[in-house]
Amino acid sequence: MTHSPSVMNDSFARRVQEWYDGNARDLPWRRGGVSPWAVLVSEVMLQQTPVARVIPTWESWRQRWPRPAALAADSPGEAVRAWGRLGYPRRALRLHQAATAIVDGHGGEVPASYLDLLSLPGIGGYTAAAVATFGFGTRHAVLDTNVRRVYARVFDGVADARTAAPSRAELAVALERVPLTEPAHYSVAVMELGAVVCAARAPRCDSCPVASDCAWLAKGAPPAPSARRPQVFAGTDRQVRGRLLSVLRESPADVIVKPDLDVVWEDPDQRERALAALIADGLVVDLGDNRYRLPS
Image (cartoon, rainbow, N blue to C red; front, top):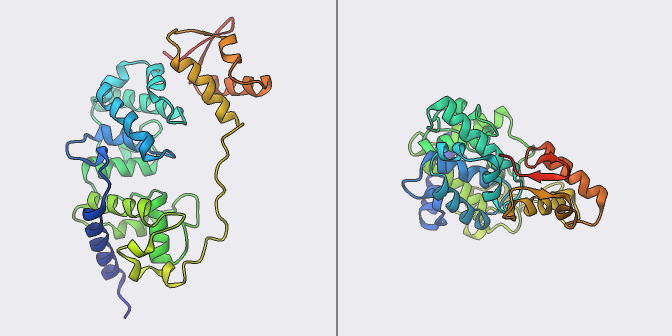
């Protein structure tokens, strides 16, 4: 029996939400009373970073900077310092810039409008939709890699999304699947399903609440045409940048001299290239005379 798209969507939404209610992980940013600002911070931190690494840093940020104004009043360097070893530290600068923009343009309150959120520094389409949905309960298509993979498998019968970023057509179809009531509950449920059951590798199809309607599983779960290669970290410029930044972040001194940075990496060309990239990104300030500090 073939179901209409609306019936299929309703059935999918109901079963996924019921599954979530009995199986969701207890993540701190999902609990009651979490502010839109705390949601925004969590979404930025979770980009390309495992949940277990994010939780302690998110908790410390929430205590130190509970509102955008608190972060905006502090220095960007302190944001970088508090970012610790989460990786991709430019996100710390973007959060500081977003906090400043919220104070200057929105009276210190995170805006509820998707377009206003999208206008904040460093906030893209996914993050704007996620904050509007999870912070304010409004209805948007929240499409991270996990949600896109669930939709690709269940509805399209393929192992993963076909493009790097969702098209307008994909966003429109995804929005049609979001119920009018409790859109945030639905959106987080699909996201959780993709994260813990419909995983990219070794999916737990026997535990999936929508396995009976999964077009991909019905086809025998064919693999994706080309699997994404894992990113290499050891020996890369990114590793060197991380080591250089750690010296500045962990030092009790505000200013670091060049010899203290030179010891972190043997290859001088790669080390200088990494340092130049940190300066260009605004993560390190060159004071001249071989002296450096975090941004103030």
